[in-house]
Image (cartoon, rainbow, N blue to C red; front, side):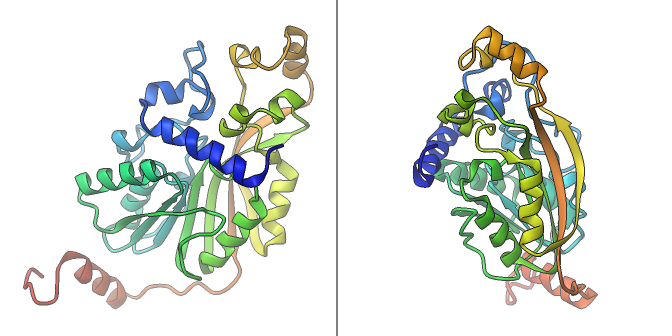
Length: 295
């Protein structure tokens, strides 16, 4: 497997191209990162279109779950979205946290940051902010977030332990995360594991489900639970690029499984509930300057 920085560069280049193409092309490919499959269905993406707060222009069809649906976001929460793309999960989270809360999206692809900021400005969302940076070294101070969400991104990061550690650092005591990601049960064929396209396509970078959950536990999280799980099938017209017909049959019938899972976990500590006074102060500062008289 390639070195860590080389893998990051592959992902950054691939997702910069994805940002410039349409959702239909993205959704028809393996997590939006390979040549579109001829099959007329989405491989990993869940349908956001009926979700309150959904913004079509911000949906690039790159997810593998609906983490915000399970994230238990409350009014006034500070929410961080890891790998925020064009901003869709941030805008859904913003609907839940309200104008009195705050949403921070983090992405390391400059064109994605530009796209998400344009979308936020169009919507007039002054409490949604996008920061360029790596999620394994977040540009966020300690104990910032009440809730962290992410959608099909951790599998793209070579050092997953570092990301989990960063999540623990930036969550407030008593805060929690809900993250959708790709995991494995059994070993992938070598041709898939070693291919850069399959890495950028959310498959080759995935780790074993048991190892994934253990990383979360080893970093001090509690009340860990899988909120949703669904199998992922790779169409034969994608597999044929890597495997023979015989190998495809074996791959499709053996014990190896690729799954999208949404995992919830909490950081230890007592969560400090916001008072009504604190919430009203946030709302006031969000709508005007002290001297403007608008409030």
